[in-house]
Image 1 (cartoon, helix red, strand yellow):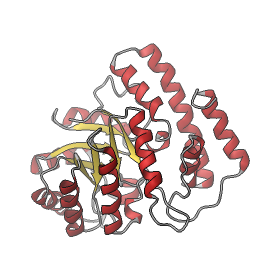
Image 2: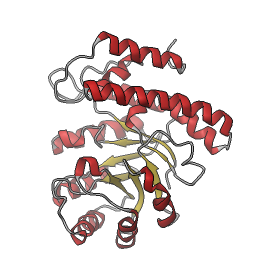
Image 3: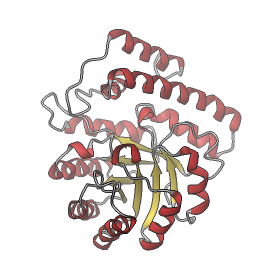
Image 4: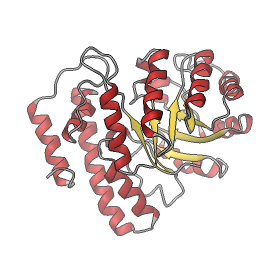
Length: 296
């Protein structure tokens, strides 16, 4: 059962929109240096839905190769259809992924629960890896409630985790209702009250450029040092609030700028072209990074 900080790996691109393998490998080393507890590849931050099937395979292969068994890798394989999800799941297993993530089949948000069960069941039939449910109703239109998640776990025993992207109000129910062999991860960076309660960890895009900070927060809370934990949570929250505010104004290009501030040459992210951030926005981001001790 996974625990800790699982970083949602971004997929960087060259200026022509092709995958930037060199920078992706640098990003992996950046995460590993911070001693993250695992990687979550090819979700929304990983631009999985914006890649072709062959590109998703290519990115997964790069990540698995660069990690080289140094940390667990959950490869997201979810698609709008079952056969492609199955094919990517089999590939994830063949290349050595630790687990697979599966978002419900997006675009078909009116699918009955029986169809959702069948989707996950058929993927499990062709891939023995542990399954992480990727609960992200904002982007797929389907919510895996705690109650339905328990049914899904009963029908598909290889379900071993869930990322709850936007349901922090229900985290208590996820933890209480799921059996102990299922890890419950939040997509939120505010974990001060969640880790002591039993939440397994976090998979949070806004803080992916400061993994050393989120790892320190998780480790501190796990050791029950809540005084230090409160200090670290305040820093993480400050980063998160800055990121969300900037992204609302200027879009997903914000995340590329956060990595550039860390010295990583992310030329383009997301895949589609975005306007450059204004100089003032970048300076404001730098100021926050200095305030929390990430930049000098």
